[in-house]
Image 1 (tube, rainbow, N blue to C red):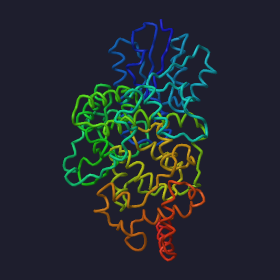
Image 2: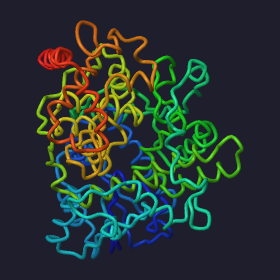
Image 3: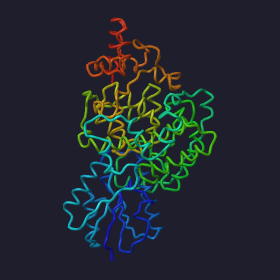
Image 4: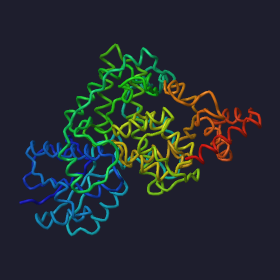
Length: 511
C-alpha cells in the first residue's frame, strides 16, 4: 500500500538526494511532464527537449534502483494545466497519507507549493533539496531585501566557511582572485588550438514529435538530437573532460570571444550549467573535481582554477541569494525606465553587427552562448538601446537551455540591465565597441568601423555607449567607477558630442 508520494520537478534530477538512499515499498515517486512548465515562456526547442530527455533518463535511473515510480508524460498530462490537477488524480487513486516535495528554486513554484500545502487534505512536507552550498535557511545571514550586497565579500566568506582554496585561514596564492590574469584575448594561434567540444548526440525525435503533436510552441533550431548531457553519467563525463582539456586555459580566456573557429561557440567554457541547474551534478562535486585536477596537474595554475571556482561557489550561490532576498519585487524593477522592444533579429540573428550575429546565432542554433556573450555582447546591447527588461528577461529565459528563473533573473535584470538600481552590481556593465575589439576578433570581419563613433560606417555601439552615458548622467555621474567615462565624454567638443548623439538617435529610430 502506498502511504507516501514524493513529487520530483524537472530541475530536481539529483540521484544523490537522501530520498533515494533506500527503497520503500510504501513510497511512490511521481514525475510529470506538465504543460504549464512548457508554456510559461516560449522555450527554445532544444531546451524543452533537453529537459524532457533528462527527466525521462532520471526516471529510468530511479526505477533501476528499485524505487516505485509513476511517470506521466505529456500525452497523459495534456488536459491538466496545473500541478494541483495532476496531484488530485494521483492522490485520489492511491490515497496516501503524506505528500512530499523538495524545496523549489523558483518563486512561482514556491507559491504553488504553499497553495497546495494550505488546501491539501493530507499532510504535506517540504524537504531540503540537498544541492547548494548554502541551505535556503542560511541565506538571510548574507542577504537583506532591497540592500546591495557585494559579491566579492560574499565569495570570500564562503571560501572561508567551506575551506576552499584556503591555507591557514588565508587565500591560496595569497590573493582572493586573479581577475587581472584572466582577461586575455585569443591570438590566431590560440584560436587554431581550440579543442573540439565534447557533445552528446542524444536522440530526441520522439520528444520533438510529441511536442509538435501537442502544439507546444518553441523557438530556435529544431534537431533530432541534442548536444546537452541528459543524465548523470554524461554530466560526469563532461565534467572530467572540462577539467582535463579546458581548465588549464579556462581562466585566462574566460572573457575572450572569437568567430574564426568552428569551436568558437564553446572555447574553454565548461558548459556544465544545464547539468548543474537540473541537479544532475552538485556544485560541491564540480568544485572539488576542478581542485583535484589542479592539485594533480602541472598544466593548471591557481588563476585558472580560482576563476572557475568563483563562478560556482561565488557567483552561482550569490545570484540565488539575491533572488530569494528580493522576490517578488525584483521582477518589477526598471531603474533606467527602459521600454524599447527587442529588435526582430533576436529571433533570427539577421543583424550586421558581427558580435551580435555571432552571439545570438549561437543562442538560436544551440540554445547556448557563453557568459561573456550573454553579458557583454547581447546584454550590453540591450542596455545600450534601453530594451524593456521584461522582454530581455523573457528572451534569456526562453532561449537558453540552462535558464531557470532563479539564476536567469538576477543575471539579466540585475547584472546585465542594471534594472535593480545596483542591488547586485556596483555599476552598469556597459561598453563601447572598443571592449569587443579588445576581447575578440569580431571587429575584423564586421561591416562597421570600430574606431569611429559617428557618421557613416561607424560602429553603432560607440555612439550608443556615449548616448547611454549622456541620458543617464544624473544616475551615474557620482559613481566613482564611471568617473573616467564621464571625463572622457566631457573632453569631447560640442560638435563631436552632437554628431555622436545624432548617430545614436538615427540608429535607435531605425530599430
